Length: 281
Image (cartoon, rainbow, N blue to C red; front, top):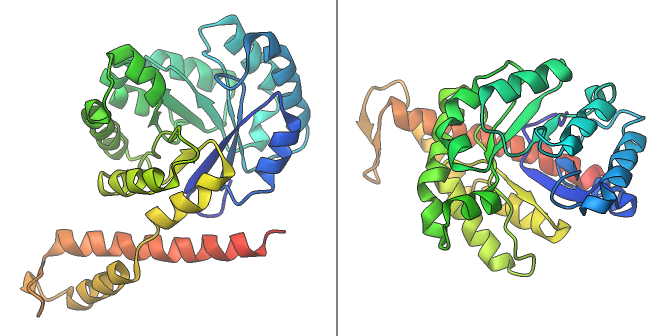
């Protein structure tokens, strides 16, 4: 797995090994080899075979998104990959709607981190149950395209509650903050940046991408600014004196100190990730 918490996840279709190779050459923290939505039904078998070939050697930066495990495609994916995914950083499980599904998958691939995606009203309602279904659950997230279709949502504001729900469920379950779902317009980098800033302010951490050009935008949006880092240092310096007011009027108590520590942890992590990025060929 990545040495620091992932910030970027890059989807790539499993039936395109040339694209998989290019994705692995990017600075994405995790490459999601996709057997589901990115692959046409007639290419599912080829995609599965390509994933098996890729995972013949350990791929610590790879997650595999399998098909819905309630379908023959998904069952075939699990059967083919069961002995191979231990060398990856996990399985991304689409369209999860119950804790029982998660436990069945965990039993099929013991020891492999699972990342359930909530893509329906029922899955969303059961977010906490799913997040705590098995020790193998390493994170949860939304599949917003399918969720929009299930809810009949046509405006972004219609997903506000769903997004807050998954952030709260992850926190309550003791999981990392969820990553944002993909931003589908690969040419609208300004829109992506604005959306990432909104997601960061709402409690998300990082984002999935569908094109390498989106990766630096996501990183820049989620990286603490110099002003935020300076402000956090000022808060930490005031810690231990009880509830106090700083010269600029900011009130500091223990909750504010915890938030400042989170900012500084993130800034240190991003420094390490940035160093790793520059050292890659």
